[in-house]
Image 1: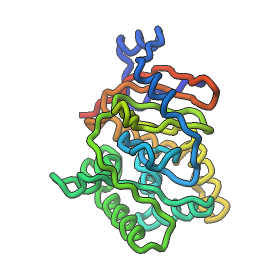
Image 2 (image 1 turned 90 degrees about the vertical axis):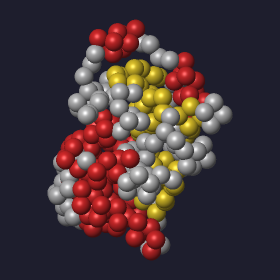
Image 3 (image 1 turned 135 degrees about the horizontal axis):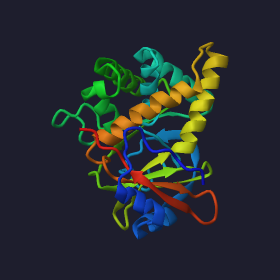
Image 4 (image 1 turned 60 degrees about the vertical axis):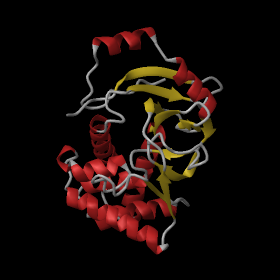
Length: 266
């Protein structure tokens, strides 16, 4: 398995290094991967959140914020909120998919603007993302309005759970992935489909160049997305400092390796 570089801002501690060298993988991680592996579904996208029920958005590409997170990366590249939604949505629909995003039952409570922690943190702590909080809010308002209009193929999932993720599984394969919540054992993990995310961004850059006449480089999309992902990893109480594991379930026997703990941003 190709080694995945540490998230920006993360620092390898002596304990991290020791765990990595001895290949220490908790039994609950191994069991979760074995029990929850499923074929991929490339028609939709969901967030990395561990609170999707076992029958929700099964196999869909798990990335920070879902397709809304890709639109947030477009903001970082200088596109307006309207453009950030329209261009991502156009690419998704051109590939026969639906624009995926989510909220949860905490929306509107205690100052929570949206139940998507990736988007909410970017609104509330925009300086950590290199974004304008107003622009992220405008993007969210556009997504909500388009969902309500019914004019686009979109998928909104309202999560009903409390965060209890035990770690972060970074999926490096493209044929099978892992469901986040084993409800029978009541164990949650964040899931990030890294390889599929990279494929999506590569295809989108090509689409923008060939169909929209826009010179948007794949490398810039990845950099913008990674920067925002690392901010969310380090800011949210549900993810900061949690152990990260590389997972590949494309073969008969799952490959699992410890990466390191997620960054902590104060």
